Image 1 (cartoon, rainbow, N blue to C red):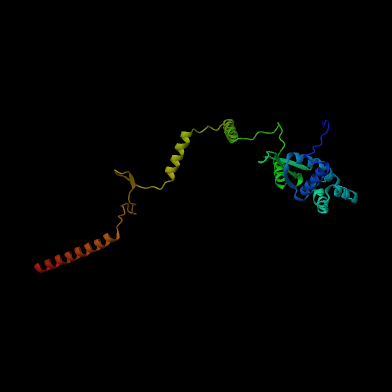
Image 2 (tube, rainbow, N blue to C red):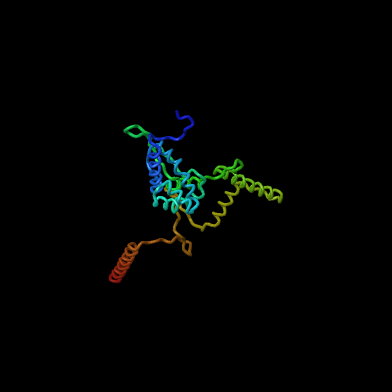
Length: 251
């Protein structure tokens, strides 16, 4: 019986189990993310996190301890050069397990295990949410709507009108009715208009021809009419000269 025995043997002897976890830890440090079963990932998390904590002190002793677990020089240099500076301010919890579902062959639970500080997409999303998050208080002022501003503007206009009317009443100036004001405006317009004679026709009112200095209307003529008038004058002059010649012959 295995009472109070929390270590998962993973179906292997102790030497085989330690070798497997050492190889998985090396792969995780070099690649920052690996895919394995959930049981192995949980055993690996317990195995690698104490090594990462020891890597925060870059000393010969800590390097030798890390090498005793990993048995790989490249993994040790990567751990102390790349991983430890990023996890320096993190107090534990250096890995994350992301479950992906069951495997097809034996239906084992599969997952990704990764180093938290090397997942750039999740870090960017977290930074964006923190930037958007703002503190809201219950005493915050309400936003003014368009209707409220319009009502306030109308009230101000009405108040100004009432003030002006009250001032006029105190001064003794009579108020002008809107009809009287319109009538006076129309009279002023009529006075300012130029004096013209209008002829009433069936279609409406149209201005008549302007008057001469003598008081007679000026007759506007078109270019063709002037030529015809000149020809008519010449014909009348020739007829008069012919009539005078006939009178002289008779005499």
